[in-house]
Length: 203
Image (tube, rainbow, N blue to C red; front, side, top):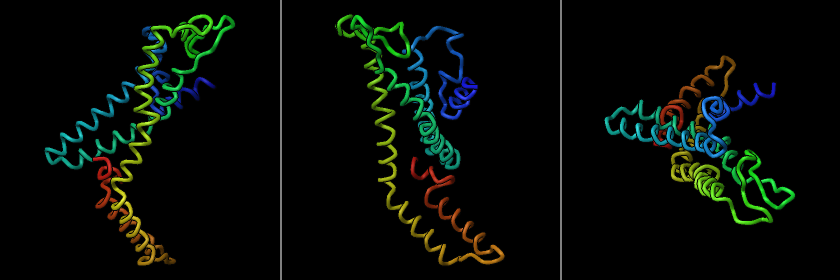
């Protein structure tokens, strides 16, 4: 039951390392798993963003809008699993002799006995984790904030127009007012924000 829940959770959050039994194919270890969980989603996001720009150059606005929305949605889905993987890279368990090993992979030593020097292999993991930390746990919220701030005028205008709709098309017994309001609502969102409410913000 627990394995089924972890698998379903990995699909919803796009956690490739948990969704696919990659350890059956090859022994990647913690660092390989960390790369799969963070670099591959980032590559997919960059490809979607790049193709969106290409299609927009060729005036294929509908396809460009879908791709533009796509990378934003992918980033939203991978954010929890990628952030979790990054933080796991800094979780070390200290032994009785003063040495420490990575909690997620006890074959990797963090530092030597009596809190000695950092292990060379683990230093590489830390450097990579710090880089991914700037992209996912820190960079993603900043990106969301920047997108919202850059489009604050458009979002405010949409909010103002939608408030006007509530007054112009009040609820009626036959539901006609609600239908008209919903149709106008969808048109405003499409005109101001793009189909799905994202392309104009993320393009």
